[in-house]
Length: 410
Ligand SMILES: *Cc1c(COP(=O)(O)O)cnc(C)c1O
Image (cartoon, rainbow, N blue to C red; front, side, top):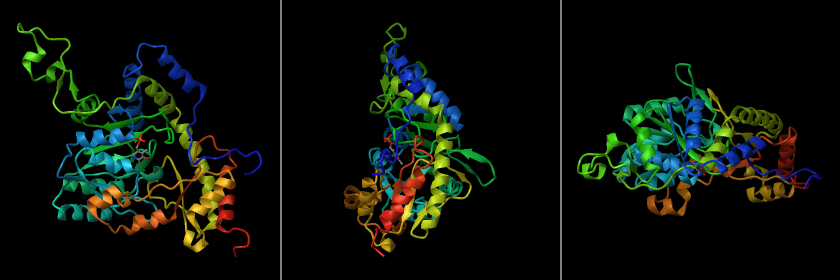
């Protein structure tokens, strides 16, 4: 390890005294569970991403599951999910009862495009499934060809569930030249965020769904809270809602469908709200670090390349994924990671193609998704978090160069 240099994990939250004070204030208040901070966070999040409604929940996985369920997905339905994502994009669909149609990705960006989605849809339909939704994943903070994916979904009547767990703060330019924030209202689009500490803003654990659809938001709110309905206007069983003389029963609730407790609490919401106020600062810092990475990685091409940039996207970078030609370097990825670790640098791989997991392999058989395999063979996530020092990207790239060409190897 470089003398005196701190160990660099691949990602880390940034918590300041004001974040801590916000949480402590909740501890001294009346509400520990879902209270006024949840609503305050939802209002601020919706305003920040240009959505009319945000529904906060326990984590990004719950947010995905709530979104799929609120979109009406169930047995016999299928969701198109890119093979390069975290497990949860797919598991949350299975836990809603739907099947997963894994799509291939662009090997240089890790992102799904319309042709990948169409191939997955054809496979699902050939298996007798109704494809009802498509779940683009904004890997590392970048969106893929979203305008084309949304058009495809609109033509086929599919709901778009955008997994934006990596992409709070990202914006892109649509076909008409308008700037669109990830999470903003759009017809047929539901967006999902995570506030796990490794993501761009931290709530401890936390998630949210944004939507422009009022009825869908109501359904999300019910589903996050045991499926309970308390609104007098929506109660259906008269002798539960009222006494024999017609006076309302103040304790009444009804359940039309079973659901989990997927609530976020006020402690988490206070932290998330405080962190949301720093999103622009975090994003700018991450962008500056990514620029430094790009400069220092350039001389390592073609052995190492940054992720391919998608046109029209202004990413709020969550991960710094480098694509390394380990075969050409004649080095194994795990050996390079071990060398970097010994030099005080933490790295990770995002992600193992999900269709290769034993659960999906036994459910759907072997799938040939060469773009995902090619991406996976090269992916190496380098440290990226706001508290990194200005010189850290150079240090990381220098050590990466050394690890790829160990002394005496040429
Ligand atoms: C983190 C993550 C999730 C799950 O979010 P949790 O808050 O950890 O449950 C889902 N999808 C992607 C792409 C993620 O990175």
